Length: 230
Image 1 (tube, rainbow, N blue to C red):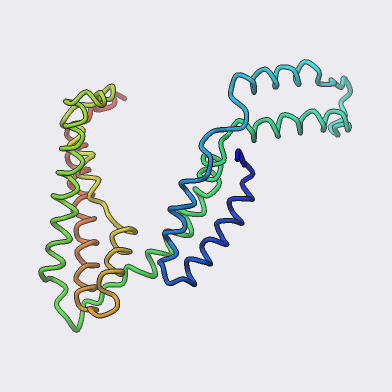
Image 2: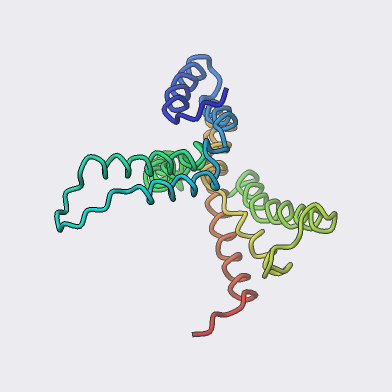
């Protein structure tokens, strides 16, 4: 229907989240559904935005006094610019930008604190599950990213990005093995109810695979990327 007001999607998202929670379906699915319907197109295209800004600037009442307090007409013109700036950014990008700090500095740390506990005593944290998760993050992610990139480029679906080569792709593919939030989330869904020992192994595998993938990715990229001349 062309609705671009962010408050509509925020309020609607809260309602959908609550209904999913009460239905017994995992409430995170509501976030996935909501993301699909938030518009990625702005209400005002960039060309019209520039024209509008130029028009406002040309009609802006210039004050030649040293008074730092703006008059009502100047404030009205600046608010026009502000509203136009909001319209030229799509609701999807605007929400992503607004939530960036909250997600990185509040949501993710809280999630990590709540889900990353590994009990080193009482049961063996090294087992089939921890080995499988570690290998999955290291080899599975590497193979998936590298091979699908190879298929896309050789199949002419995409082109190699400027400045990249296959050695760089290998390093990036290794970094893809850094799995934390989603990996722990899936581990909790899989084992939390009836298999606490296996959940402990899975968490240990996630942490081990993440650390090793990060270190290997850094080593490879540090070796293959061109050095910046100082």
